[in-house]
Length: 425
Image (cartoon, rainbow, N blue to C red; front, top):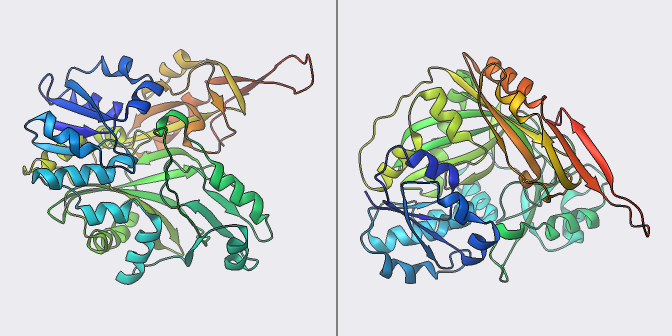
């Protein structure tokens, strides 16, 4: 097996270390992203990683040049959201299974995805593309709505508006959202949309698809921050059977509507009055350690199965979980991260599987505006989702985050802000 992973994904490489031969993975990454995120140090820890190629793939097809230099490849996989179209294009160019170029383009645009859903007759919120505050006001007409970028990731730029909220302020928040080193340093094209607010429990589905057929389905329950920026702060696996059954048909409709062929689909839903409404869908593995939760709860390596179907191999996966797992994210107040305390205490708590620090001192926290503001996380296991969530939440509450803020007044000293039990809720 020789895998080309477009977009560096540390969690995927960790899983692949246990199942792929030494040096069998080639990572293709943007040179700006590789250097800016300091990925060389992380990459050195992975035995399966054999080489790294530097080429453009974010809104660019420079990756096609690299295909001629890499040699024989058995599978092409997207490691990141911004690599979905490149992975589909690379697979097609090499005659390998993949999402399909048209499906990948649809998944990368929330506008195109909404149009595909409406055409297929699926539950769909009212929506439209917007170009400024006046478009938002005209659409909302005094009602609650959501403004979001059509092609960004990690809840970046998503703003919830209540009736009468300032559309100009929302537009500014949505359009100036930045990702730093996660985005290549060149001009990018972004579109924006507004849609009606859906109210209800939020869940996600993770499905493995081969040749258009669903081979594995998981439901993940999730929790988000209240307020204008619905950043996800917790997940638990598996979801209940009633929710799973309700979503199974919707997921089949989604796969058909998009024309998705082979790979993983990670879709987020809101159950409004019990009916599933799609929030968004990604043609790559989920982030937020959801794959880790699935592997714990189902006692399987879902990452290895994903790579196998991308290589055209047959896979057998469990259809029911044997235990449960949960992750809880720790937030901090706005400012420059000074230090994080209590990680060791959290690691020793009952049921804890892993504790990870996500940001390092000196990183700037923007006040929970996106998933990039999460400071640490705890993964826990349990006999059922409720106990796993309890273990994760209890351990996360032992972590304390201190940030520094500065007064603009001349000579003013920085102020320390410590968030104890900073778990979002």
